[in-house]
Amino acid sequence: MAFELPKLPYAYDALEPHIDARTMEIHHTKHHGGYTSKLNGAIEGTALEGKSIEDILANLDMDNGAVRNNGGGFYNHSLFWNILSPNGGGSPTGALADAIDSAFGSYEGFKEKFTAAAGTRFGSGWAWLCVHKGGKVEICSTPNQDNTLMPGVGCGGHPILGLDVWEHAYYLNYQNRRPDYITAFFNIINWDEVAKLYADNK
Ligand code: MN3
Image: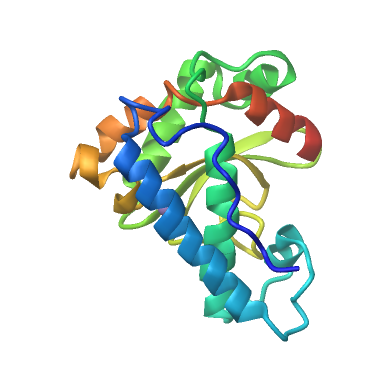
């Protein structure tokens, strides 16, 4: 069974003014769509065919550039759409809020550290909030389409929140103003979904 481009859980214009409809449509159909079809091409007829994406990434041969880049791209964007919501924003609650307070002092401390991780990633990549087994959370960033499920990459936890800082994610609306895009991101985080990922992977 080949991987399929997941549908967005909201309309392309639902995240405006924080992320514009044209960016969302190109990002989903062309970029995520491209990673999906190239991943399918890269694993077709190999031992990886039929495995889950988490399994493929966790056991990845890091020299396999086609699966690393396109498998990462497929997984990262699937996560990204789900942790965004037009009804998002605010701050986390419950066990996730406790873990964030414990790791970063406060929600504001988290925001500052995540903003720095996303802002200082040179070139293309992602900023992550990850959970380790036992429930501790950690922030890191990775280049290109790498993620922390891959062997030896980033902080090594399970990603529960990710921000795409490739220029294709923001350039139409923000041009070179990545800091403004990062600031806007906090208004559309779906904390209910992040809390669910935290509970499922801690
Ligand atoms: Mn992208």
